[in-house]
Length: 65
Image (cartoon, rainbow, N blue to C red; front, side, top):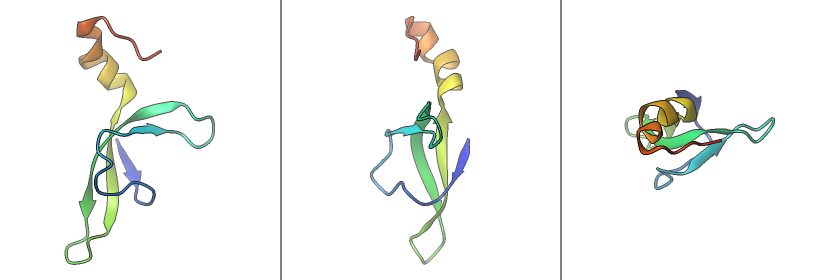
């Protein structure tokens, strides 16, 4: 999942990401793509919660909800 740049910064990897409207858990921040030479992020990468739950946590009998 990709999100617009803005709030997250370097060092925030692993942080929980929530929606603005209803504060629902969206997923986990993975990293960003950076404009060459500027050091500014132009897109953030989020591991979506549904895929994380289905592909990883389910094997450990863990649920996000």
